[in-house]
Image 1 (cartoon, one colour):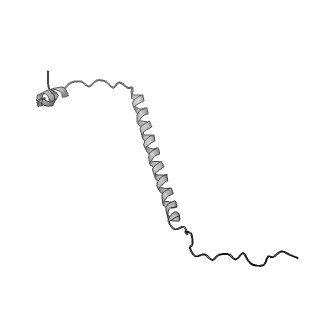
Image 2: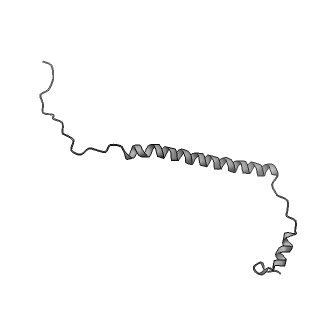
Length: 85
């Protein structure tokens, strides 16, 4: 019984000559899965680009919005009413 941790170079080279098993999935399924991954990757990139664009547009307006003003003059409510008589 061979120890995988102590295999010799000759054993490893002998394994290279063996035939690889045929893929278990048909070629159409492999292409379909690759297309699905590619579409998912493109959608993720588009989502990231839209999010970055929205942040670039919204962030400056949020940072430069006028805050609450301290020291605004109080309104005078004790003036004479303007009801017609």
